[in-house]
Length: 110
Image: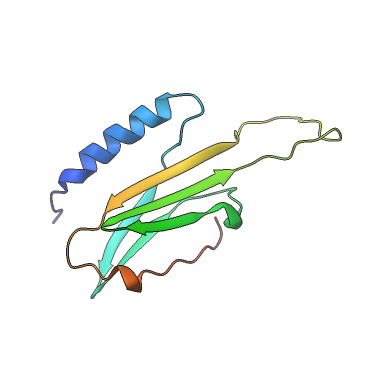
């Protein structure tokens, strides 16, 4: 049974507005589930340099930022370029009772 999340609609609206602006941060698809007393968030970040990923907790707000850069230079000659360099942003309200000190992150397979 799905539970109502009042922030889901707000997050979708904000992401739509940000995606609509050329060059603005884009939304990263994610899944969030609870496994016992842990919450697990999986976000899709294909083509992202792991060094560009920034995860920050400010109070009860979790922010995930990432950048996709593409090779540039005098020797680079693009054959096709369907993926753009872009910024990605996702913010989630953690709610009360979440142990923000226990948050951990890993990056694998984009």
